[in-house]
Image 1: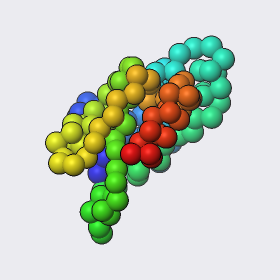
Image 2: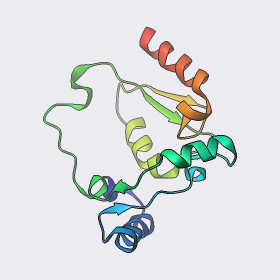
Image 3: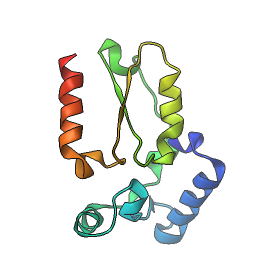
Image 4: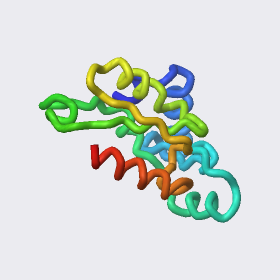
Length: 129
């Protein structure tokens, strides 16, 4: 389960927040700044679109019937400006996998919002390779 790879204090805080806000159904909406989106018009736009995250999406184990990507090409895009720390364990796991390319994008976790042209360019480059 995704919760299993989070630091214990982060997992506990998310569970507590879910209990306090919805009786354990969902994690409340964070500030856009958590994802690297600053204040202002863009931050306000993102805030209006965020919704609570179902807690079960963090606590339910993911089961795969086939290998990840099922033999298809794959690329992991790591956004590092700033790094969204909850994804670091996944990034570290991917880096340890053979034949899984990693590309870095100097953008925040919501790169498609804060750096749409750079995101599109990188995706087109990956698709063309």
